[in-house]
Image (cartoon, rainbow, N blue to C red; front, side):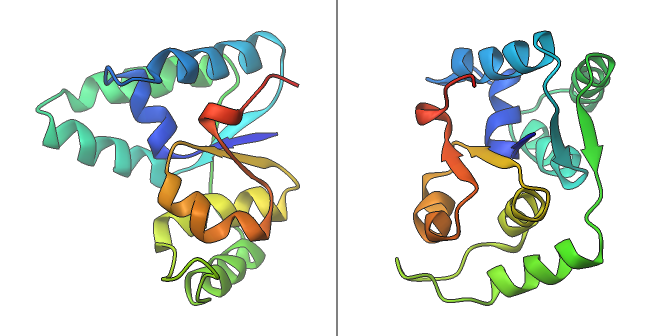
Length: 143
């Protein structure tokens, strides 16, 4: 299973350097029937970005709905994943600083479900790569 965070999803509606790679990640996993998911918090992070860039909330909702038709899932963390989220968010990183709560939700789900978090968030990656179950979009290859 692949878990994507908002840094990946946002590339589907924002033209960024690696937007094409993000589109390919979704297309390849959906076409191959591989599980691809994100916690429900993704919706609110995407809406926040849409608001900032004056883009339509309806467009974001339709994009998610279309992905769901292809098998994309929005997940809610269970109690163990919430506990893992808290553990991660309160643990000083060997790289310095603490990862954000939202980023830890995505990563905790990936860890607890033996999935891989794909992110374009280099700060979160640097702070948590020692925990495993994470790869940068730039390094992601279909498996």
